[in-house]
Image (cartoon, rainbow, N blue to C red; front, side, top):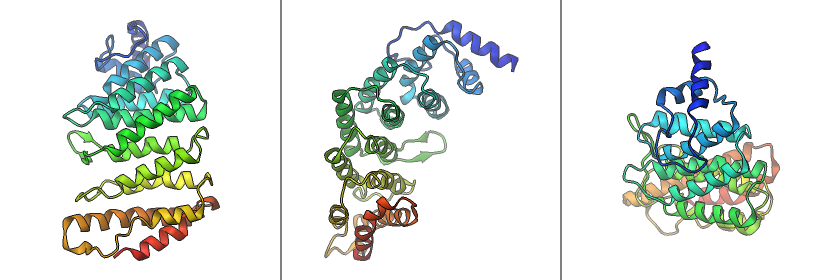
Length: 294
């Protein structure tokens, strides 16, 4: 415990970076050992200014090639502080802007965009719990999120050395947080719903990393808001079965059958088991679509 306390003290002393987004990872003024010590201390950083500066700095680690830094430090640290409401509105607004920029900036390794989206899901959650964005900024966040999600084409998942590249799942997590934000009404929910549809069954790719479950979650939660009718949900689900297509004679057909069935079954099972009766509106349409699939 003494070693951790000393390390945290050093962190506070070294946190002299200005309160703007940094591009260096680990952030300037911090070593990896210091960040590991902070994580071991359950992210306890008493100096508010130092904590907010470090939060801005950690955003640069969304694209780190080391998964223990990208996922285990940057994401976990920011998630902790955001959920504990330990970051200022100014810091969270700066994070939102920074992460939207990163989310729109492809990189060859394929880490930056998915992890910017994942961290941004926590930034969006914080705005849902205690609003700090104005209507214009919130709309911009929605637009940027939909733009990223509907353009995901990197479907890599987990690698034992590199960790996760999980663009669809992380994008779905972001859309989930937006879909349950009471600041958004039916038009916004319909945009999110229709964006989800674009990634349910990508061409010739078989989901094997739980993507179908993550894609289903925004649909289940937005249904619980009761803003989209059962009839509208049924019409939406009817778009998934492809009439007259022999799905057993091509990789594209088999992939679509695999992915659509997985998505529909997750929707139906979770709505059926849910104690929230509002998502029962999904059941008729999901069941009809499942029965219509080959």
